[in-house]
Length: 181
Image 1 (tube, rainbow, N blue to C red):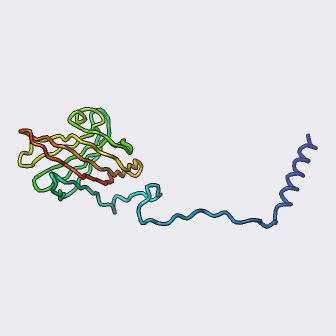
Image 2 (cartoon, rainbow, N blue to C red):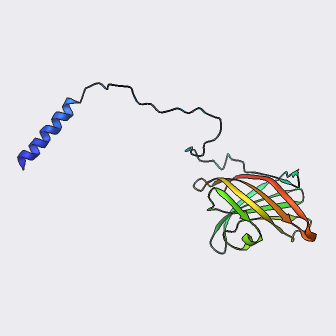
């Protein structure tokens, strides 16, 4: 046994010392440098800083740009233990609330009155503040473009047909949001 350990030590030492000061031959490996396109890279290690980030919400209501006064973002749990992100804003005399499950990944999702009461609680609610207790639920779609659950940052686009009383329809188009929650 002593001979085997001694032989192993001698072989290892011989290999170690024979390669110690030999120069490297051949080209040094290099990383490919990609051109900077000026845009953001979703794989960047820099998280979105909620202090420096300004939440954004945009939409057209029947072709008219909505100028939102303030954007309120709240995270809450539903009765069925789902965590939802609620994005709410006002414009003139109108109020818009979008409820988004916090576990949605990138993809397209349909919402309607049916998704208001059932999991995953994805819906869009509209009301005219002249009648504060009258709410209308939109039928439409939300497409999550990016959702970083760790940094709590979501970017999405949406559209909706909002059916009002007397068979009226309000069209919410070109909707987009980018928020930190």
